[in-house]
Image (tube, rainbow, N blue to C red):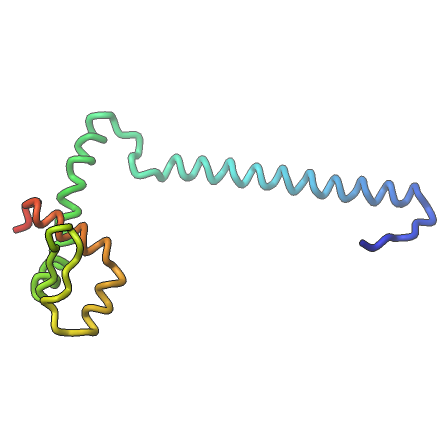
Length: 125
């Protein structure tokens, strides 16, 4: 810890008051930024002031969007013969390409979810 020798105590008090004013100004500006952020996030939220019925319809549409986004991934998994075993673990034994296996192991949970949805006949065309 460093100590500073102060010859004029009144000057030191003024300096402390200046620092506290800077800190208060910083806190006020920070609070204002957070208020603006909160207002903008409320304006730009995904629900956009929808009614309860409209929110329920959006929730019902979500599986359709999931199916569309996972459909191409499921085709690739089926092409490389990636399946789930009886314990719902991903079985890579059907795939012959080691590079594909190493890349797919990075997304093990996504593969499991996609294959489980397909096993549940999640209406993939």
